[in-house]
Length: 169
Image (cartoon, rainbow, N blue to C red; front, top):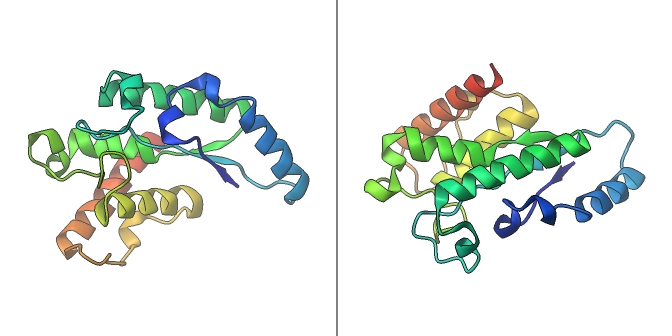
C-alpha cells in the first residue's frame, strides 16, 4: 500500500498528521495482514516553478528538497513504511546528470514547473517504482516511452539503477 503527501505540503512535517494516521488505520482495517507500507516521496519543484505554494519554500528548489526529504523520512519511520525515493532520484539527476541540469540548459524533469515531464520525468519515476517495489533492475526495462529516443531510455535506466544501488549500500 502506497501513501503520498500532496507536493506543496511535502516539506511540512506538521501536515502529515493526523491524516496519515487516519489513512493508515482505515487501510489496516481493510487490507490483508502483513501488507507492506510505502510512502511515495515527491520531488522539489523546478527552479522557475510558478506553483502558488513554491514561495513557502522561498522559491528555492534545494530548500524544498531538503525539507521534503526530512519530512518523508520522519513520516516513513513513524509508521514503519518503506520509501519510494522518487524525489531523491529526481534531485540526483538534477545535480549529477549533465543532461538534466535545467538551470544551465539541460532538460527539465518537470513539464510545468511541478508535475513530472513526459516522457523523461514519468519514466524516471516508474523505474524507481520498478526497482523499489518489484526488485527489478531498471536496466532490464526495454520499454521505450513515446517521444523518447533509445539513447535517453538507456541513460535513464542505467543512471536510476546506479543511484538506487548506491543508496542501498
